[in-house]
Image (tube, rainbow, N blue to C red):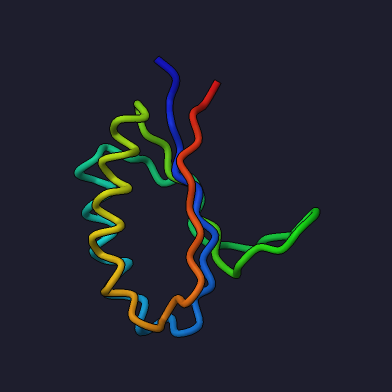
Amino acid sequence: MPKAYIVASINVTDPDGFEEYKNAAVKVRKEAGGTLLVNGGRTEAIEGTFHNRIVVIEFESIEAARAAAAGYLALRHTRGTSAPDYDSVIVEGV
């Protein structure tokens, strides 16, 4: 069974306000068995437009990634206006 990944591109405009969401999201990731591979850091766009924070999380299955995604969606309200643009996808690995 191939692994699955959640890839998020996030425009964080208020890092302090984003903390509540981030702390709760860590719990969701751990409960779903996710491994954090990328969390912010310096980015260099090759083509296209990306937000200022990129996150990549690896899961053992697409079902685990879907469970985590449901948890992240349930936390959406905690972001408030701290991250007005938040794009994420589940990608199945090879």
